[in-house]
Amino acid sequence: MSSPGSASTKHSWKDLPLSFVCSQMADVKRVGLAPAPTRGNTRPLPTKCADGWKASGVALCGVFAVLNGRKSASNQARLRRGRRSNSQTICRAAGSDVGVVLLSAGVGKRMGASIPKQYIKLMGLEIALHSLDTFLACDVAEIVIVCAEEWQHVFKDHLDRVGPTEVDVKFTAGGKERQDSVNNGLAKIDAPIVAIHDGARPLVTKEEVERVVADAREHGAALLAVRTKATIKQAVGESDAFVESTPKRKLLWEAHTPQVIRSELLRKGFEKAEKEGLDVTDDVSLVEQLGEKVKLTEGEYTNIKVTTPEDIAVAETILKERGFVAPAA
Image (tube, rainbow, N blue to C red; front, side, top):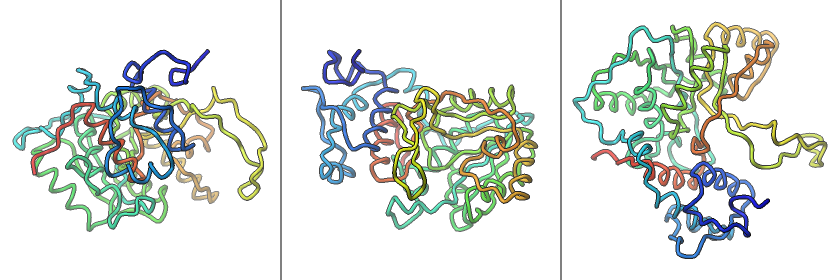
């Protein structure tokens, strides 16, 4: 049977689900290939990424046409943060059991910019602020922003523009490694449940946050993830580039954030990691080391991590498709 994007399919790009289109864009970035666009649906690539992608021979015009051309009513209603009035008050229940650690201390060398990637503007708003706005719209009691002191003003100025909020917003410095930054943020969390999110993932939705928080409440730990579409090969070793095995694709998931964990459980994980000298690349790995189960909450392929200039172009297109309007200068 042909896949939705295969050459033999009779469907047009504009008929395909948004989640499929976005997953194909992720595959394109990995393997450098894309299906040819349907005649009549072609638009020029965004200027920011056109030159780089032309050089690699990647044809993504049809994909961008789909994302630009669709206007989903539900998505338009979901994300209009740029239109928020300065006088609007965001109110959340003071009794919420969820705290957020928003990681915004990374450098982002792959972006090749003069400033950390999370402070590059995406449709008129710094990348990290898109995530902050999403969590402000959720039922959370506190948000700990992990960032360098010289960048705190970005968040403080934005909060002043947003207006009063019952969410307790705090700041702390980053650490040497990601898990050090998470631990610094966790030290300031009072809530019994903590959601850790990468500030470089600006497209997470309120609905995704609500789903993963619900799973964490039930199971103790959960993370947003999507099913892997590519076939993965496991190498013999880090410097031995030969195939040792091919894991079953149906069992593989790509980890996203937020990752949501009972605070005391995460603290126990950090204690074990410190005693045994464990290094982990994501937060639920600390829980796994304790022998605890972690729930996979199916998220959206649109929850991309912005690491390269091409990612910014993709993120802008998704925001436009959702109906996001850039804030007034």
